[in-house]
Length: 309
Image 1: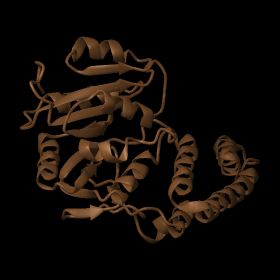
Image 2 (image 1 turned 180 degrees about the vertical axis):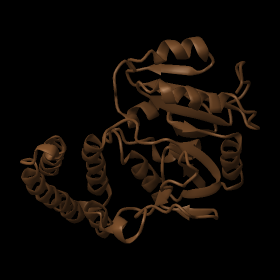
Image 3 (image 1 turned 90 degrees about the vertical axis):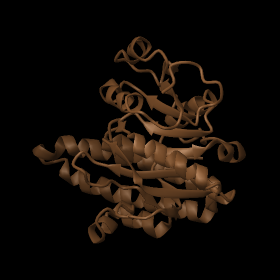
């Protein structure tokens, strides 16, 4: 990383959004700023109201890193847009704060975009701590797929469904996980930034859908590996509501009223069935705490299906 102002825009601007996650942000930055990368880059960190001393630590430890302090949680998509707007790199790397990157991955993605002018975005494999591969990329949603996910029938039939995790060759795909995704700034200038109506979840799929519609390719690059701890920001019950909200917004924006209504009916009917099940489970003393969480979560989904505009 350059310690002096660059005479030209960096090859890559790394944008990281964080919120009270210093435990993971520290090793993430160490993995970025330590290794000798071939390409120039700068780092913009957008803090969404951390209360664990993240801002003071960053100022003292990494003064070269640009810091945007929102003072509150303004949402992931809005914070990412702030970071992108404050950066100047030819490419933008959106990076989760709970990741560890390597020079090979970052340089490999830059090299790929340099030699593939039609590529608007590229991302690689996301790895677990034990060396296994996480969900990497997927096709755009269908009602059949959403039914298989929501009922868990898909996972029962095909481990890891619906994501692809074992690809070994470069492939043009519909969308890749945004824990580590490199975007061409020229493509963003054409299609716009992340839609801030998505608070979290779904914004990256929406952006890549718009990239595809504009003729840009989204590519999976298996050699660009990133360690991703994952699931550190929301518990499963809060995440359910936000994931469903993102899916319904995506359908409303891109799939028309009929499929949007069908998706809402699917989510609402399954949530009602779960409410009945967990209502019965709540009479068991050893299940009451879990049942209370499930009932609250599924009630939120039903209300969301009814009122989301």
